[in-house]
Length: 202
Image 1 (cartoon, rainbow, N blue to C red):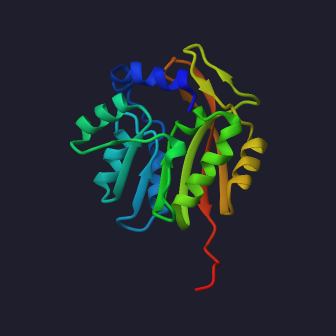
Image 2 (cartoon, one colour):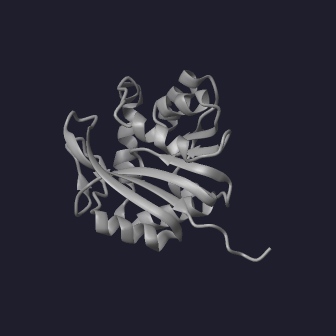
């Protein structure tokens, strides 16, 4: 995680938490529809816990995490349950989750590190596990007006990076726009991927 970006979220946790983003709910519904009942979900970058609350209300077993301890504390208070501080490169689990939800967080991973982080997500998923992440579209890494780093991938670069991270049964990508914390509209890539089945001999 880029240090300046992480410090931004640490310093602005309360203000960020007051901003509710509703444009992704259709994608959250689509993600949950791909999972079995009571599936175990890892949420990366949970922010204020809005998506966590929705997943819990639908009966899923959610491990909510955020890279900022201040943001994790805000989410924990909102949810009435512990929220862990977890940096992406510290993800250690193997085949532990039916789904991984990473809304608007992996877009901050430095480009040269994204394949490694995606490989950790791939490893943490069970065979046929479902993975959602979103990114601001572009063609080179850079910073926004708030000095937050974004990897700004193109569709082709992102597909190649996912392919380098692990074997996927399917990968779909759609485009859209979202208004960010800086009140600017940004072109987005929304990615759904399913880990390939496990072909290891029994």
